[in-house]
Image (tube, rainbow, N blue to C red; front, side):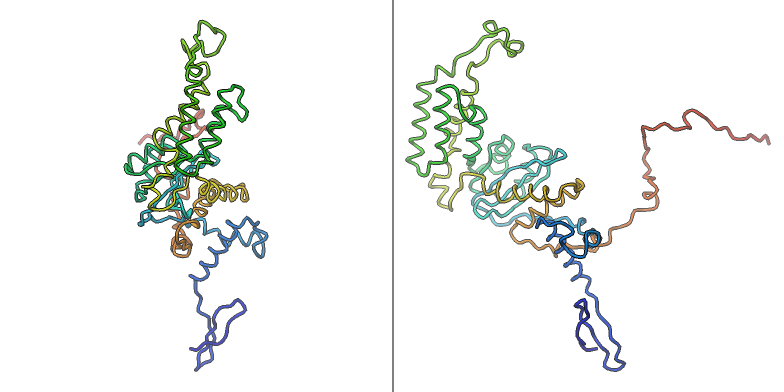
Length: 367
């Protein structure tokens, strides 16, 4: 056999030199690779199925098997200087926790969970070598899991999330003078760029407490305000609870060194330390939401697979073709018992069965 040009489809054609018989040698692997590339091109580009070729029905038939391929990010071997971790909530009540490199934004791992608990973060952190710094939004589960899995890792609280928490407590336009001053202090967090500015910020926070310490310690007793809904549950409560909570959060983070860890020389010696999770929010979570919005109406299982593909393509060295297995193209068929619905377990329904009201008695023969 020798090569004899190509067919209209682009396949290599061969011809026998003795009998002049022409044949083509199909390459299923190349076809499967092309199908998967077409699937990812449609899934991640935001284009409709009608824009992808001969028609929506032909595309769906071609890429149907691609939903069986589940991208798995291998655990990283190299230790990273900084790691960002955060969870994003989707429809149907599930959450996806993602860890990325703090400098490049490379996805290091992901974890599905119901909510951002310590166990979920522990399962994710146990697959990643301990970094020097973890940048997080401040949820208790992430920080607790970091202290357990990576005891020597420092925590840098995302300053943008700290400012959001301040606005949640004081609103964008606080009514009280103490709240106005405290919000100005919070807004200055992202303008701190060196150790001297960080020290002056801490002095300003301490000066605020000297002026307003007695104010935030004021209490209201239930006997003095019986119409307040809190009076049915408590004997007393803090009169200015929101301002007090905001100050205590800022003071605790400053005292624990989680506000300005990115300025410590011991940590910056290994490389720059970012102070926000914007790279994770805008580089990974935002494209994920756009993919689900572009392909709204997907089944829940396909929505999860789409999220995993977005994360996988942002990992260090994605290679979709290496994930294809023979069972993806031709999944195992269910047994005849499974096709008939006979799984061996009792089935319970909510419908009414006619046999519940009528009993059939067969003919009896006396031998």
